Image 1 (cartoon, rainbow, N blue to C red):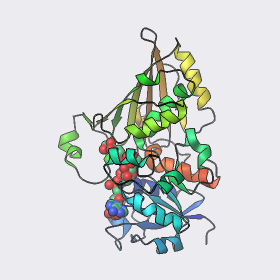
Image 2: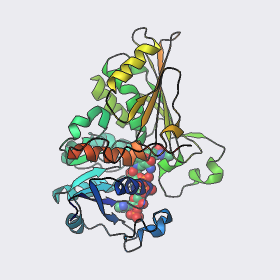
Image 3: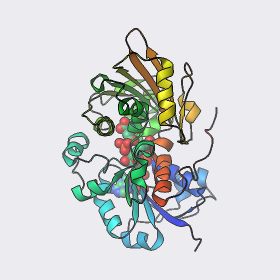
Image 4: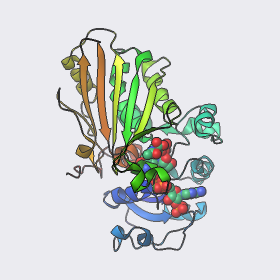
Length: 349
Ligand SMILES: NC(=O)C1=CN([C@@H]2O[C@H](COP(=O)(O)OP(=O)(O)OC[C@H]3O[C@@H](n4cnc5c(N)ncnc54)[C@H](OP(=O)(O)O)[C@@H]3O)[C@@H](O)[C@H]2O)C=CC1
Ligand SMILES: CC(=O)N[C@@H](CCC(=O)OP(=O)(O)O)C(=O)O
């Protein structure tokens, strides 16, 4: 026994799962004990991911709650929507801690989940029990929790760019528009026509317009922070890049403010938070500047003619938008330093 926390990953063969492996392998308090697959148990993990040859020599294991209980203390679920709905209650009842990277436990209202995900919602007892792990905003709820709903990629970037303004009541909640762009790894490793090289290369397009499943998740966070119902216009676009999300949000300020006022508000709100970097006025963040890292970089500006604020936030969808925030949540759950195992620099260029 190493004395480390033992971790298993269900959905380990997907992009979220393989990113969790990268992060957990160099986490000083964690030992990765089980990589699990619903479809390929028995195969060598590295056969599907040759970049991990001689690094991960394990074979994939089947989903077996009893076996997982014998090998792990915490389970990460990086599975398609609908899987955690069924599996998380069983894992929790077996005494395991669970961090769910999928959308199944994020929305507190089952009817809203069903409307946007077109799937049966989880048992309300587990929706109540799941702590929504947007670390910089609700991190204090995560300490000591055993079931975490890890936020979605777009909701992380969008909410971090709007929360300080709503918390202080600086913007009119009815005027928020968020325009989001993502790389193709956001869609996972599965094949799809839209992600075919010749379809997305040298092209860009909007998708799920007014129907994106992250809309109610963003609204749930913003409403919680604002203390009133917030409804936003949210549009996602696919770009020909592998990783990265950039969200541009616009809203009407209730009073005249300057660039410096808004900058100061953001700097104050995120003071001491290791993964949010607020850029100086006029310096706009790029996705490449957070590539492979757990940072969310934010730039702000006020248009004095319209008294609208523009906020630009960027993350790596697979790190701060998925595996990195999941590890950050693990750190908070366990009472470790929030940045344990995550203090690496972005890959640049
Ligand atoms: N990609 C991203 O940027 C982000 C993804 N997410 C969410 O994380 C989750 C995983 O996404 P991602 O890794 O991109 O997706 P992938 O499609 O790359 O991987 C999903 C994995 O789930 C496993 N799986 C499929 N069906 C089942 C099943 N019935 N039971 C258990 N496991 C199953 C598959 O592996 P196998 O067949 O080996 O079991 C597959 O490798 C999704 O819910 C996604 O929405 C969240 C934030 C960002
Ligand atoms: C490019 C692409 O398709 N991205 C996905 C990102 C969603 C995701 O990753 O899933 P969660 O709902 O679990 O956060 C999408 O827009 O639906």
